[in-house]
Length: 253
Length: 250
Image (cartoon, rainbow over all chains, first blue to last red; front, side, top):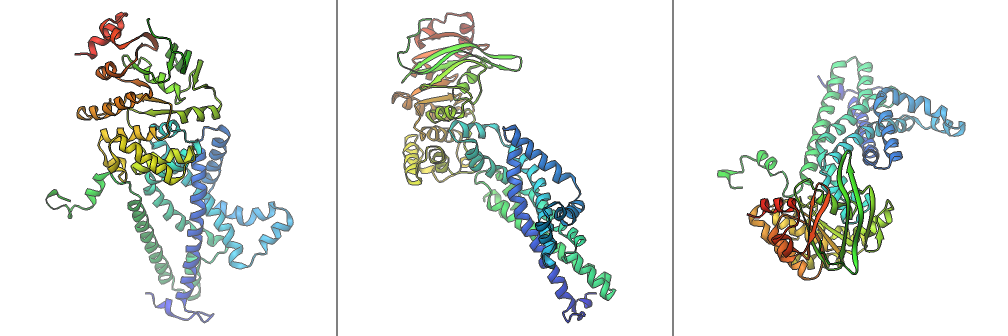
């Protein structure tokens, strides 16, 4: 079924090299977009819980705008509309960026900012799930609201939301496929190219599918590792016990 | 009310009022606390005693009246609030330790981030107070690995690390198993004997007798009675205080 991958293409490369090149762009887009999304998402999420009304409103507005417009539409806005809205000189320079980058940067901005809105809501939920006593204790110790969030609130909130962040990690790399609509030759686009060049549609997309599945597995294992790595000693012992029933011979760990 | 008039008040409340919606939590409460005084606040649940001490470091905002702490007037001014909170330590019923930090980090975070102490100095100070509450050997553990009594003693050490002039205790032993109450009370007695100014909401009447300079009895948001512990326990003036004492002293 995967014979097609090892046949030479018109440019002299093997088709599998097309696929791997697509994989590289998918990964660059997903990993780069993730860090943008995480950084902005945490800031906006904290902003959502601010007592300052202007800050809270701005954060809310950000979330509503970026979360409620379809990713595909946002992709087109970044790629086609933004350069026209900017001053002509700057707009032209964006339009003249050499091929992969001209599509890569709009896609990076799109996925980063869209995912940030989703992460922000989870960060907010994590913060609101913490007992009020944590905020009170931080305040009573004289910590500023900023220091309390930086050292007390956010580190705990992030630990709470690791499971739901896992689906965001998986979400962002799946959404990278939308970038094919603005001409970025990522994994799905390369699979389509192989299919068009060879008519081996099944083999090309089956290969892409397996790669996406493997990526999901890697992301899942990574987040599980992070979850354990940052687990607070002395908390949630029940969870640990459930995970390692075999090791608890006769109840003695 | 035969209360001694403090000469040098560290805390002065004048006709403080506080509402939660329609509920009138504090009604015209006035109170003066001199340096080194130990005040016990008691009363039935919902009487406003916790609200009262939570207003002193502005964990709750009062609606009207004046609160002076160590010369600072409590208003919306964040600088004054921060200054007051550095001078007023608080111990909560539910400990409120930071679960993601070690005991040592719990004790050093505020001195470092709000007093600007260096790491080494903050840790040295933390170990001093952890030794004082007799758990220096637990410094590397996390709160979830300690018993309730140990956690509350850490909470006391954490507050002391800011070297406050006043300590507020909000029912510090109410969430503890009975066998752990004593270790926490012993720590508080030691603190009292060293001359710390203390306001303590508690139902531990034995402790009140032992350390209190004055006992304040509250009911329905009002300060009903204010007396030396001997007088309060043997001869409460108001019927409501008599009723309350009959229920808590067996």
